[in-house]
Amino acid sequence: MRITETADLWYKNAIVYCIDPETFLDSDGDGIGDLNGLAQRVDYLAEIGVTCLWLMPFYPSPRRDNGYDIADMYGVDPRYGNHGDFVELVRIAHDRGLRVIIDLVINHTSDQHPWFRKARASKDNPYRDFYVWRSDTPPDTSEESMFPDSENGIWTHDEKTGEWYLHHFLHTQPDLNTANPQVRDAIAKTMGFWLQLGVDGFRVDAVPFAINQTTFEGHDKNELEEPHDYLRSLRAFLARRSSGNGAAIMLGEVNLPHEEQLTFFGGSDGDQLTMQFDFYTNQKTFLALARQDAAPLIEALNSRPKDIGVEPQYANFLRNHDELTLDLLPEDEQNEVLDTFGPEEEHRFAGRGLRRRLPPMFDGDPRRLKMAYSLLFALPGTPVLFYGEEIGMGENLEVDGREAVRTPMQWTDEKNGGFSSAAPSKLARQVTEGPYGPAHVNAADCRRNKDSLLHHITRLAKRYRESPELGWGDYAVLDQPNPSVLAHHVTWKDRSMVLLHNLGAEPVVVPLTLEEEEPGTQLLDLMSEESCELDQDSSTESQLDGYGYRWLRIKRADDPRLV
Ligand code: GLC
Image (tube, rainbow, N blue to C red; front, side, top):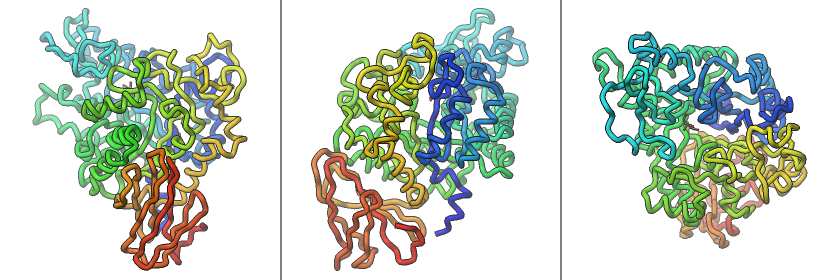
């Protein structure tokens, strides 16, 4: 094995941590989190083992969609700081060995963006073609809106010029016309700007919408490259601009089945997105957790395209800043997950997902939570955490919509959970109350308690980092008779591991046969310091508690790693 490769394609065994700067730490007492506050907590994140920060939008914005409605792609919202604070934060992160990626929204802007203000001023304004317009009355598109609760469709009539503009999200988020070369150049220039300020890449928002067919309709096909060429050109631009700097990445949000995701990696050329979140496996994982049956998860892992090449990578996650969307599952499976983990109407968002964090879904069961995070780190790919997951934060259902999971980070049991010294009425968002409030769940207490989720996740991060086969390896699901168990094998160069996860509450015995291994080979459990040995038939048995898990490293005489 060549350890050097892990430093080149750094993202393949990174640990990504997503932060909403607005709700992380308020350093100046105005009730709003800020970049200086975030900088104070880089050491906390480094101690957990996080290797890459993902900053959610911090740009000037009317914040109709938590900052994903951007009014100035080059700016820093003054409530969070300024460009100087941004550069200081990136420097501190780099010094502590963490990379920084930022959200890049290429599908839309805010309707307050100067481009859109100009575009709607008149039909012949030079910026008109930055957006997508139609002059005829649109058909019923209510099924196509991403926010069916608040929008009737994806076209809104503009009074002044009498035409309709396209918006897949809110009507205050007009879709950019990414078929327009000027828009493409403007987006690339934005990337260039932030790369120059030191970022290591981008989490690219809502990618399939940005290259959707509606945007491209009506354009002269001979003049235009095909939509995916846009992603190719952004990736090529990124490579040119970041080559001296360690390669920067594009981590794309593509909520589509595996087969379709393949195109977004660039097929066998691998020349589009560097990484994609694995939404399909995420949704099947929740079905598997709901049923306490690993079969849906196994099906998802087996359906991942195996031939994506070395550079592309999947990012795994349990929860993120959005609702837990279940839209890739058939309706009966969606209902199973909704009924199990979100029985009340208030747990649900737009009928398709859950506005909950994980611990309340599991009724706070620490064994089940620890197993779920072990699974997150053990799945083939790169794990992504959402702030507060490491301490077991819950949602606040008093807060509207998807904001329920974006409440202030809980640092201590003090006022406002240590997030801010401002009066509670001044906070950017209400702190969670009740059993998941700061009195019971906070980072300071977790640090002192060796049995805490925080310590567990810190340990998982360490073991994950010293086991690059998890991020890099080929994998196979192993046969064994327990329906509640996922047993999988990863191998990279001369390194192999067997990972066992019991999604069920009952203890089980897992018989394993590793035909390719010699009798007598030792399997070392990286989580419990126990070990077992393969018998004459290269078989062994492993006991798992209810919600138990094991990370078994296959011991090789020439493995230079400490055990
Ligand atoms: C992505 C973001 C989500 C946002 C949407 C529109 O799905 O994750 O929070 O609302 O894009 O930008």
